[in-house]
Length: 117
Image (cartoon, rainbow, N blue to C red; front, top):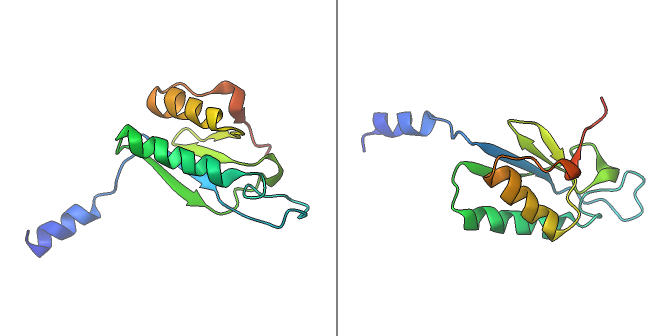
């Protein structure tokens, strides 16, 4: 591939049907704000990553993030482009989000939080 053609290919952005951002912030257990990490986020995000990989869908991405500012409600994840915020608490919640929303296009209403602005 020529250098010019390779450059053009690399300049094309990846477009995702869904892009999930998951908070990996870890504060000490006694911290007044809490944190997603202290609230058990790591095994949930690990499960989410494995489920997405197993789906074979290249149009769904997961990105680890720092604090998403709703610490006490954590673990927190947000799905774009819809801007839907979830607070999954169990592996089954992750399974439902993947199956219903990310693969099926139907948000899981019972797990949605609406951040107050």
